[in-house]
Length: 167
Length: 418
Image 1 (tube, rainbow over the protein chains, first blue to last red):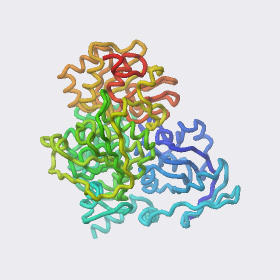
Image 2: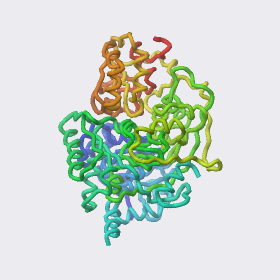
Image 3: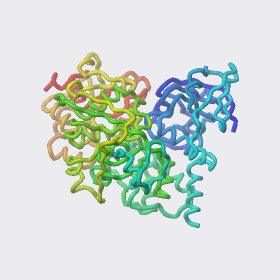
Image 4: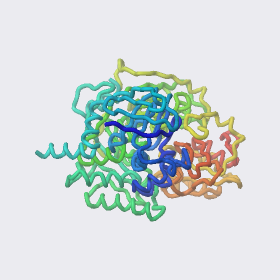
């Protein structure tokens, strides 16, 4: 899988209240959540972001609440992937469970500037910065998580498992 | 092995597990609320099973935007109610019988020592105070577990935090955990189990243990846990709805990091905007005026917290420039506060005494901040916009400091008013 897009930069400890404020959590409609994505980190972001864009952030991205609305808002805004130095753990598992590609790379988080074009080779864990020609490695995805991705997310994986248990 | 590794091993049918291993484990209880359950319910329906794995082990609790704050919230609450009826779930809690999930489940004996609990709420880590492994997950995890009774986990590394010395007056579990987060940072325990230990913890009452484990997530922790002891046993006996098992950590258990804290050096502590790790002694913040004071939440809404605040404000008035909102975490806490005359103390002081809800903690309802307003709250997060307008500010403290601040109209310490 190759993902290519323009990047938006965010700092450290971007919390789930910044990704999708709780005032919008009286719905779980993905399209409505997308209209407020990252709003409390950057007021204009929902208007600026374009399908195919990529978020690049620092440490502990997605800290705070367990709300799956956070990766859902990002995914349904058309953002292809998130690259960060590190992810908060519930956000990390939520992203895999719902099929939002995420990549951990300190190098990439340090070096990519807002607006850079990047190309991610998801299978090999290589991030290419097409703007400055640099190449970064992301931390390998554990085999079980790869299994989740190839199943199409946790629900599809569970469907298969439940069918297996019956037969 | 650590207590965490032992509980995880027991729930995946293994003698041993070690940090970094990915396991599929059996869960004892699954929890979701009115924000997270709607997604879990929709995802569950996609799996294609006819029944849930166990109708007595799924707790659906409308607490965040309940009592239903608007039409959309009412629709979400209705999804929980209808799902619970359709699958005949025994652990659905209607408004009037509910409480904030993480206060309600321990109080009702629905989580017990040795349990493995997952909840679609980050503060699920609270139950570690009982000697259970409990962690927050997403709605999709809950959907999958409702069908199979299992969930996947990476066995976390454990870090040990040791508290010694004696506690200063007006210092409790909240101050210890805020101080700790201030020390290690909001990702200082990322992916780890935080095991709290030491002479101070061994004599710490259960409500304060619950407060400490509750905020493990605020340091990035996967879980917080305290090895169960006589205090645990006294708390669970008479309320546990299921048999329980007390696990301990071995003498030679391995910890990725050990930190020690001299409690005699920990003062009443406040987290300043906009991170829980941004801590300062309360006494150094007397220049900060407050528009609102909130006492409650899954962190500090238990009866002991309400009593502590009442002790400070008894016979006094809320400052004319400040509003105070007191929210008992459960119906039982509410009733107890009424019986002890605490409700009257708050109302006489000019405070609101509210029905249980998460409400303002997450900027839901029942006390939202306007642009530029400041609040001191016994809640758990002070992120940008957490309690309302993105340009409002939240300071986190224990109940006594919050109550003192309500009287003063600015951040202050209980010594200034009592």
